[in-house]
Amino acid sequence: MTIPACRLCGAPRPDAPGAAAVAGWVSDRDERGREGWFCPDCARRHVRDIESKLDVEWW
Image 1 (cartoon, rainbow, N blue to C red):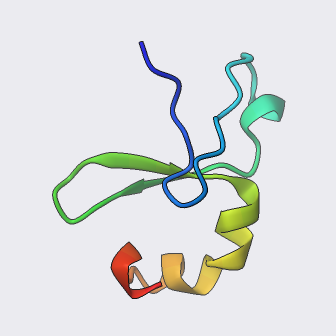
Image 2: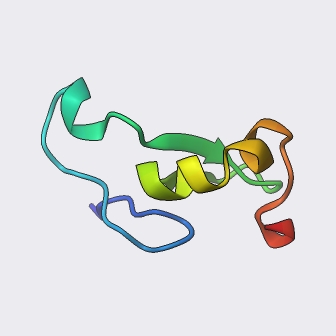
């Protein structure tokens, strides 16, 4: 099993159980239906892009 990482910067998502370990991570589905993740830093940096559902290629 691979540990999910941020789609933009590649930071690994924490493997620890519990909501506090993954707080701030954002789940996303691309245009092909694949699930991806954004770390808290990238999610904050691109919050408007995420909310407007722009493709990652536009960022």
